[in-house]
Length: 369
Image (tube, rainbow, N blue to C red):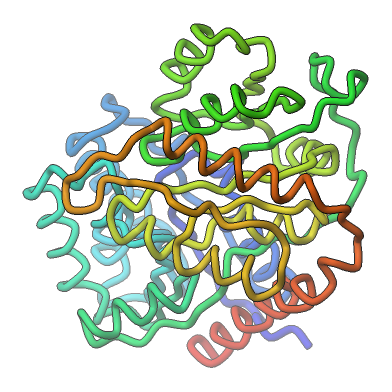
């Protein structure tokens, strides 16, 4: 049944879209259901500034102007940083949906910027209750917004579909011929992501290679940090990969690393996309001891949780060497076990994008039809 009929949806996102797998999955699901979906992203609205308040102000201004001139039935704001421009364009003429991929005012980058946090929180308090539908990535974030703002959110987990062998992707490294165990970190190389722990942990894991797949604010700093180590030849940075390249790389990994420092509630409650991706790929994980990701690993037994990490909670900076040691110990626990594909069966059944997709379509059908 074509539930979407002729409903026209415009999705707004502040990044360049191509590597935003959550948004791309939602677009695909909505189009399958018969909705007409177009997008407006960062590359469609170039502004002079690339970050900071000037970028967000200019981007939302341009977003409002662009969306106001488009014929549509629904405007879909991905995250708080597009909400103001989307609301201005939607008010009085079409429906408004917000998809919160994270607790935006609680990201680590702005924890020491009280004015910036206040601005984003004010936008959320003012506008989230005005949306026709609200979506988020995990129950912890939904519970937080219900308690803080009194709004109801539908949880559509950030899970990916997985097709082994979608394409061939070869790294220019010796790992796969030398018998080294491959530790894969895939994601943004930003503050609080633990990439430095993983680099340091290699000192204690002589039979392993670390592959860092992604870009971010700290990419060049992490390259320089790794280059100073005696084991620098066992660290490989691929840069940003397309989703199909990343899927192929996951198939070669021995351990998936999903690390976040407990810096702000956004990271504390996060359920990163890679957790579901590693489950579908049959790759055991080492994850931070944070509620959502640790729950998956402990419930389904698909890896190990890093224990004894000392973070920056309450302003106390922990020992980086202690954190690297804790990470190395968790990796060793995973590598000590012989993993079989059936070890991931229960987690795969639970973390199934087709189930999440159905929740998304049902929400849209209820809201728009």
